[in-house]
Length: 249
Ligand code: PEP
Image (tube, rainbow, N blue to C red; front, side):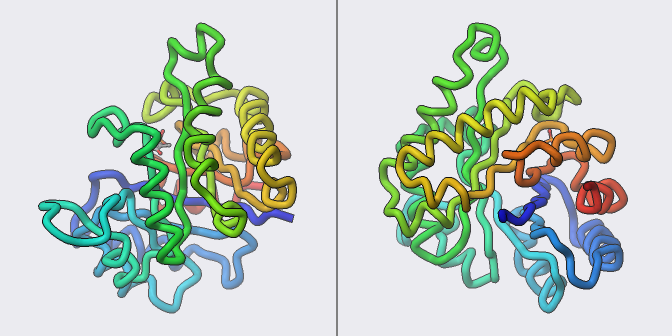
């Protein structure tokens, strides 16, 4: 039985003051022993603040990107070991905003996933099609290429520790959501792709949905058999909304 994972992606939002307020509301509203894994992925400069605030709570910390390099002359980059030093358990890799604005390709994303796994953190690998790709019937082809570029470099031990986020690009930050059935179809397809490498791992890998998930659509999405949680952008910045998604059945 896979646990549900609810991960907040704060993107480039926040300040010391607003983070403190948001985290204290989230922590106060969390069940003592949640049945779900809950993560907040904060911007790099606030990882120390968030690590201190979340220590000893049921909320885990994540980062939003990682360098493909281990260390050295890579000005502005942040390595996996640095993230690990600040208690990150999760790292978002290959978010569509990184792919679009920083020209990250599948090969680079695959190497980043390896870096994260090597440091015993969990990569949240984002895959998803653009609107014109969906409209021209290419969704499965696009997400398969993105996922398989990563699966091809992973060992079977790595594979069971992967989290995949299906994030249709046209649904991110737009208020448009894939219908539960549309999302379920892609999640089931992604699980089949993983099963082609290892059927045991396919049963373990959490595949979460991202793209305008909100309190009012979380229930139906999370009820689908292959949707194991959510990667939440906008709604993760409001404690009441994030907590409502965590509590959705
Ligand atoms: C995201 O950025 O990963 C995301 C899903 O954003 P939103 O929930 O705002 O669509």
